[in-house]
Length: 124
Image (cartoon, rainbow, N blue to C red; front, top):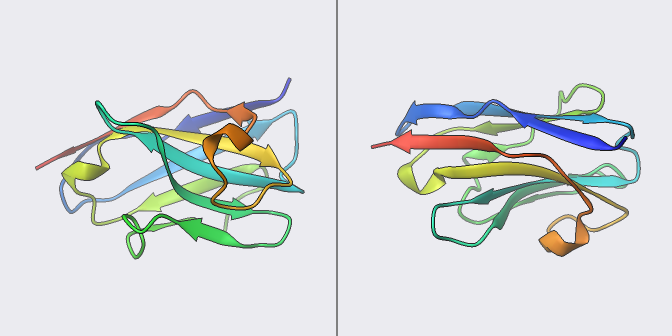
C-alpha cells in the first residue's frame, strides 16, 4: 500500500525551529515530486516547498524562502522540512504529498498520495 506519514509538528515559540518528517512506504521517490503543503485556520491549503527526485529541482513559496529548507541529507524514502524563524503565520496543519513525474510547484490536485498532516502551532 502506498502511504506517506508526516510527523514532527508541535508547539513552538515565535523565532524557533521545527523539523518535519515525511516517511514513504510502498513506493520509492524516484520519478516523484514530494511537496509540503500547509493549511492555516480558516484558509485554503497552500504549497510551501517541494523537491523533484526526477531532476533535483526545488520549490519554495515566497512566504517561506530563506526560512524553510528541504535538507540535502534526506534519508532514503524520507523527506524533511527544516523550518526556522517561525512566526504565527506559519501555524497550520502541514501535509506532505507525492506526485509522479510532475513539476515542483504543481497545484495540489496534481498530487495523488497524501500524508495525514501534522499540526504546527507557533505562539507569539
